[in-house]
Length: 366
Ligand SMILES: NC(=O)c1ccc[n+]([C@@H]2O[C@H](COP(=O)([O-])OP(=O)(O)OC[C@H]3O[C@@H](n4cnc5c(N)ncnc54)[C@H](O)[C@@H]3O)[C@@H](O)[C@H]2O)c1
Image (cartoon, rainbow, N blue to C red; front, side):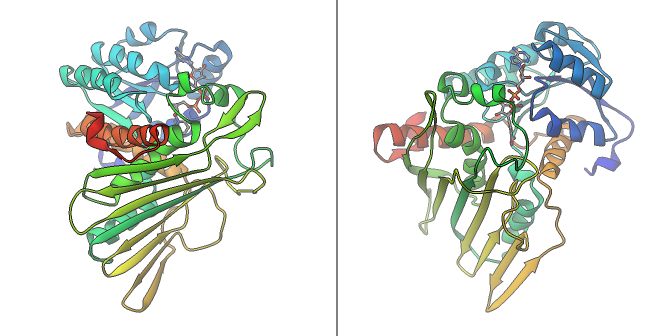
């Protein structure tokens, strides 16, 4: 359903965690005619007061107070990953609809507890992954569905993480990086587990076959002061079924490279090869090259697609619209629990492969 089609009911949200990404998660709630932000909860007093002023809503210091508010129908969880499971379960048990930012949990066991709470609740549960709503990716998927490249045979994702001190892109508060650099709080590497969830979801988004086997090299770069990031990495995988289909994600931390961006200094591009054509997606949050957002090669002809929204923020708007519309329509959102579990298992298989220096079958994870 288009956002404009919804007028008679509203969905009132309480946002839990008013940090860096809340700027983009709020866009859809403010733009959708049925969306309304009624409350924010953040343990940091300055953050919750700033957001309450910005969104003209109530401010709570604790989740329990927000969950007790009868004017909160839905909860958007935007906190560090180690808090996701307990907060999502509490919100589902309180009868709220829940949108949980990616990666949903640290482990599959934890995820299954959240999924059980979602199954027991009479509400909507969504894991929030926005790359699958980024218009160039959506356009590429529609070209695949239209048979433009034939059978998809490979997906190749390349990420360039640029220099952090160049004054490009967003100012990311030190606190937002501090918990990400601690694997106990992040759940895995800041690059391959946190950012990685998007890339693993892309690996699944463009191919209608489950992931069979994953092989990962994940190295570490020392940043000084005991801090490290999990890069460079080269992760490859094979899909179930015939003909053989491969995917790969190459992650390079180019710490002297200026990545132009309005958001994170990271450039992600994707090449999809089919039996009859090739697709290139040249954009995501970074704006490294002035290339058409999507290019299609088929039958000796090259077609460039320019008329597509490219601002990365649109992927957040549309991901939030999906949550609101799923609630209003009583349909499963993207990602529902089953889809999100498959992406999490894929991400965890890559972590295990790198740690154990071997090929890992996703089915091993249970
Ligand atoms: N989809 C994307 O592209 C994307 C991008 C960035 C972040 N994220 C996800 O969004 C979430 C938040 O990331 P961020 O970058 O905004 O982090 P952040 O550190 O900037 O914000 C987290 C906020 O949560 C608050 N908080 C901490 N403990 C809390 C608690 N117990 N109750 C309520 N609030 C609490 C903090 O005070 C902080 O304001 C993470 O899950 C992250 O993976 C997703």
